[in-house]
Image (tube, rainbow over all chains, first blue to last red):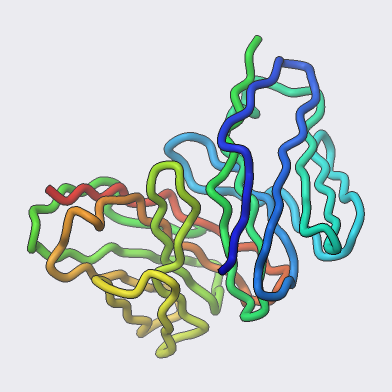
Length: 109
Length: 114
């Protein structure tokens, strides 16, 4: 079966750095997305990785290792508004998006 | 551009009732999707469409139906609602459905079946 694993919840301090991990086992791989979802709202796009390595976009970076079936989202200089759920999603061989359950990130002052 | 809009935002149904969840996008996207999201779970694909007149099922198999008569609209029909269909429903669209194509989501419809 297809599986995406993320930690259920993480807590971090305002101004700090946090890394949210995602491991996947899917039938094929055509890319990996990270989305942000604030409580009660729709998911919004953060990043896309298809090749190994780090993609940096402002305070957010996303890393991919296809051989390890592993990705992480790195958030720097955390702000209170970063409190949200972070969803990892993998595109399988049928070009379907397989979604993880999401990691709820709690930021404390 | 309004992006992806959904109506209603909230709805309570009785068991056995039917309803249609509306979804409209104004980005001229070919691909549209319906997902449900249960608490603590990932998004589950119900149906998707690659263009007007073409629809296909996702991983959620029963209890739903869709139509796609225009590029803009992709309504989801629930027949004979059951408590198991209590969830948040998201509609999304993307330009081409390609691997790198971002999906844009509507604000969601929160449905409770009692």
